[in-house]
Amino acid sequence: MTAPSLFGAVLRHHKNRVLTAALRGHGLRFASFVRQEGYIGGQWVPAASGKLFPVTNPANGEVVGNVADMGEQDAQAAIDAAYNAFQTWHKTTAKERSDLLRKWYNLVQEHKEDLAHLMVLESGKPLVEARGEIAYGSAFLEWFSEEARRIYGEVVPSPATSKEIIFVRHPIGVASMITPWNFPNAMITRKAGAALAAGCTCVVKPAEDTPFSALALAELAEKAGIPPGVVNVVTASHDNTPAVGNLMCSSPKVAGVFFTGSTRVGKLLYRQCAQGVKRIGLELGGNAPFIVFDSANVKNAVAGLMLAKFRNTGQTCISANRVLVQEGVHDQFLAALKEAVEQRVVGDGLKDGVTVGPLINATQLKRVEKIVQETVDCGAHVEMGGSVHSAGECFFQPTILTGVTEDMCCFKEEIFGPVVAIKKFKTEEEAIKIANATEHGLASYFYSQDVSQVWRVARSLEADHEQVQDQRTIEGCSVYIQA
Ligand code: ADP
Image (cartoon, rainbow, N blue to C red):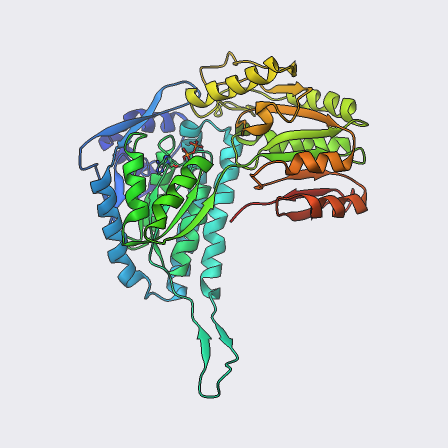
């Protein structure tokens, strides 16, 4: 069947007319992955309760579409399907799994424009970033399709002549995956790609704000020929999520739980996994320092901050949260930063040239508003922005606050919005002390052109890190992503 005729069929029969019309409005040619049902055991199924929940576009508040509001019964069916599929999937060869992952990757690539548009509609992120995420997200499928063949064992010298010690790697079984709305595609491919390559099967529960991207990936997994039950997607509203999440952690048929999201929910899942002593992988909140030393190339530091702060409107776990600028370059840095921020274009992510989209929902907007208000009440100065943006209910103005001190809430909480909070510092020791004064060592950034300082600071920051050196300017940027 050719893509346009399939698209036509979908438009005729699909209940999510609003969504398909929106996609068609953007000239998309292939929208069969716009699904309303969950995906369990290779079947597209409604919630056992028959309930649906709406997904809204944060740029304009319109309902993008409705998806199945699944509960415990549906989650159990998905776990059963994954458990049954594991019995045969884990016996497949690495080459078979590699080929299927590669096919999945190729299909994501083929449909990258539609997937990116779909992501903008439900997440609000600018199209250019959504395209970037599809490239980044699909790269995990490609990577793991290659790594599937490299799951080696080990032979260890034995202390006894009559014994051999051999380590053989086995897939653990069913992997539960609970994923966030800020990277609706990549947080699934990163987890599912690894699981499938190893021979595990999975149950994915996407965030309630962005289920369509997950369902689209499942549709493409099905088209790639990944066997029924190997990938399952359970969509659930905010109300049903705790019960679904609990089962995904506690079911004896689940071998491991993998989560990206808030520290609060991560701790809860950790507790729920304890009873069954499940393997668990958590990527939780951050409070990244971004340090600009007097020795920095200010232009590059500003460019770095624009990326680290404004990507996804500041809604990433490795967003720069506490900006520390040394007094010698503070004013120069601030002037250049203001110029860069002024060039940001706020609006609907599907409009040409837009670089700052809405926050994910009104709750998140209120959180950001409250953090800014409290920071200003405590004495910080608003250099730019500072309030809700007129573009819509979920938009916040790109904001710069100066005169911030460590005790203000914007340095203690994850802002998760387009707000740069700057504190001036005097010495390297002071900056390191402030940077390390957090329990969230997820990521850190610094700019310096002094080679000794680059190494010294990289070793002192209590966020583990990769050091990236720009050969021309010898700058250090340390970023750690907790696995
Ligand atoms: P955020 O605050 O960024 O939305 P959350 O941690 O609340 O981050 O959400 C990340 C993922 O965790 C989403 O898929 C969400 O539905 C899920 N989630 C939220 N609460 C629970 C819970 N009680 N049990 C299991 N999953 C949950």
